[in-house]
Length: 427
View 1 (cartoon, rainbow, N blue to C red):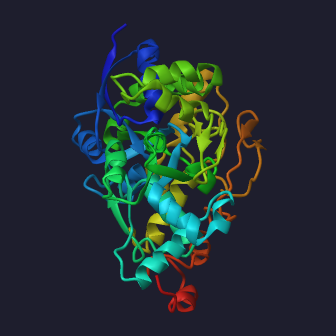
View 2 (spheres, rainbow, N blue to C red; view 1 turned 180 degrees about the horizontal axis):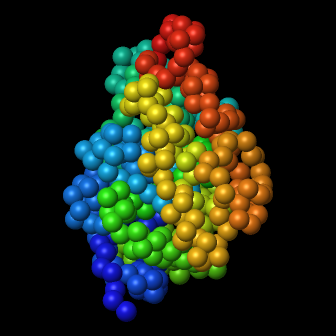
View 3 (cartoon, one colour; view 1 turned 120 degrees about the horizontal axis):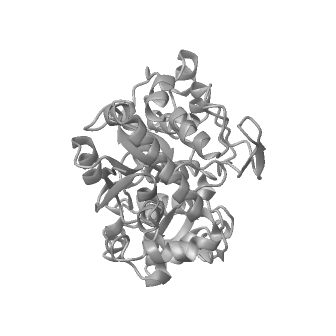
């Protein structure tokens, strides 16, 4: 059988493990794909490689694909995805000194979980009153879940990401050094870069992304739209391989082996002990001091994790609109349909006998506990999907959802009556 040759890009983060497992366990080959993996230090470099055709597919930030579909970035309307690689997996870490300031100024909030940014707001307010510089936080890319999660956490405590702090972009593998040198005061990043700061004694992880939004989308497998249209069968084979690898990785009995694979020099290249905790969900730090087991810290297959929900795309669009990155006349239904391709996923899943959702979107935030999705080819066990502030996201009512936020960019998508209502609210 002739093998289809593909170049696939990834960034050295724990959640590239599905791609690593598909390669190392021969799953790509078994699906007729001869894959060469290419490692990139930054998301921008990999974005450019995919956009120019230097690679055929990439582990990509889900908002990067959505933003491209909306016409943002250097490759507008070029990227799409039929496969979500994982849910959750990020965290927010602050320097040890900043955490100590937060603990001293508002100790009553430090023990609450999920930890709010209220103590941080008190530190920010005091620094402003004293005429000191703004705190600097980092994330990995402007159109990333890291950026949206960081802003969501800050804004939930009344902190404006636009005026109260400075936000910079730093590649994931450089975060720890930037924190250690004092260039930044905190960051939102994937693993192992939160745990590495904790182990080194220079940072405290205050909240995980799964506590900000339980089982929100993280990475996707991105391809160029034109490539997907011209290579339909190859694309299906690629999705099938990723689906098989995801099921293997998500089995807790395989997590130690998966950690050994991804910690190696060809992938993340860090000691096994620094990466295994995030994959097993054992002894995770959150709330600065508290350590606990978080089996859902990384979700790779269960809860229909690989399905490209268009409601996920629409939530991402809502936040891009909230922070002024997108125009208020955006056709969110059209953009979501361009960004995520659930029908391609269904073809691959049906051929493998894997149950999948029948609808393309769902209400997000309404489940505090596990639940059963019956609108599917077979009932699917789902995880909680709550937001830290208890909000419900109805993808059919984007304007109403946006109207509920008091901290946001000045120009947002609202009806005229809503605009008048919030016109006096400062960002």
